[in-house]
Image (cartoon, rainbow, N blue to C red; front, side, top):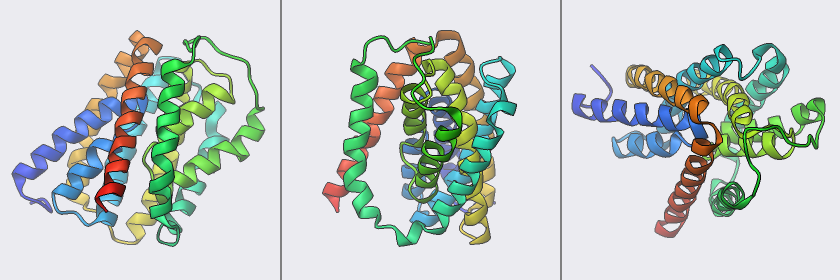
Length: 254
């Protein structure tokens, strides 16, 4: 029925639910699903592609949940979303031409820095901050850079979007989380199209994981809106630190 044994599919569905929950709050869902896909026997490209498939559904669910609650106006983000989708597709196209080993060396340092920022920076609340970059400039600089990274590598994308919205756009933590989801969805969708054309997706498994991802994302978004920065900040610190530790382990093991 699936591309893997049924018992493995059930484990992957559970991983997708947890990933959707975590990703809707602080990003980093791929930290959970990609390793489990690899352990199930998926080749690296297939694991990344299948993760994009199920993750796209989770990001869409979180986006709609935040929009319905009034945390984000999707009409105000359409230009950013288009840029993110194009950059995500471009990143996926050049995925095999970028020295991923170099990124694996750099990313743990960046992720630890992000975790330290959110853990130690005083005054990070749900209130808006000083805007340091105009929306138009933000759209043509920060958005395509992060979305392209999502297309060709991926880990930590949600954390990078969060940091950009807080530091450059001046958003509060909850508002930044809400706005991150549409861009994450768009970059996922753009790279997913490229992976689909390349035939690298486990469709049956990816779609059942998507069902679980949707359930987890809906629950995570509701909880994030109820608790706000008091939940988002510590979870973002944990996920960024865990992802950095995993990347460091990968480099050491290699």
